[in-house]
Length: 329
Image (cartoon, rainbow, N blue to C red; front, side):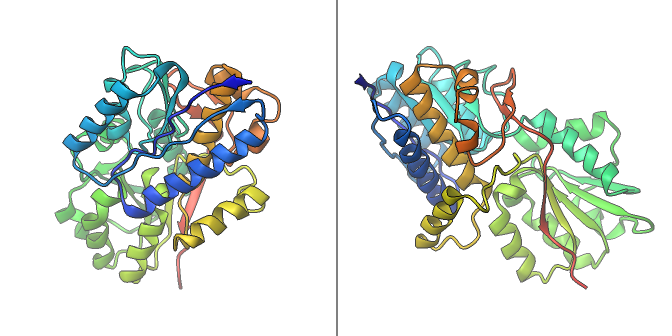
């Protein structure tokens, strides 16, 4: 028997539902992988908290000092800022990590870290494709945050002359002759004020959110219902489902989520399942991420459809658009 100890951590201090989805997805992915790795002993340990950035860093450093790095994989840290922090603090160890949602280039920080989320550059390519597919004639970019994820998307938008960058106060002046598309290049939690301001203008537009909007789909719909939104809302950059809605595993995940009062699960649930499943396989088979993805029976067992691993450490897949909310008459 291969005796391998694993520390699968759902370390993240995001919204409560997201923490629950990480915990449920990681647990189910862990158990599912073990069923096909019966000769391997792996332990699942959960370490989660709602805390400040400083407290989060202290907890990560504590893990660094207590976890057996050559026989462990950290799973969770869905946000890019958290994933970068974990990757940086674990640099110099052989500890591996798999983010369940970060679009960041983690490999440039720590070659032992991966993410099941689409790379940010590819996300931007998906956004541009969506502008074309929706036949947008007036394109506006809203970037509420000035650093990190939003800043990168803003630089792509400016570099490619994709449209006009506009601030919250200017939303009332956007043109609606032709097809008007408003792109929010930031996490949904950072975009709520601008999104609300746009809705209150009564403008007939199509809203396109960054990939995080798909991860925050429940919150997007909740806010849209509160504002009585009648617009189309899309998000790009998510991995395409791999039979998630109809598979036995998918139904089980939804059922487990329902026990935690999660009625509208976000992609984080599926991503966390995949991250934990892949972590177990990496440990039990002593293989790299790319080797595990190509192992017999692995891809059909995952919740999302992946092609391979990019140089940035992100898993890759085909272009996928999430139509979060359909226009109401």
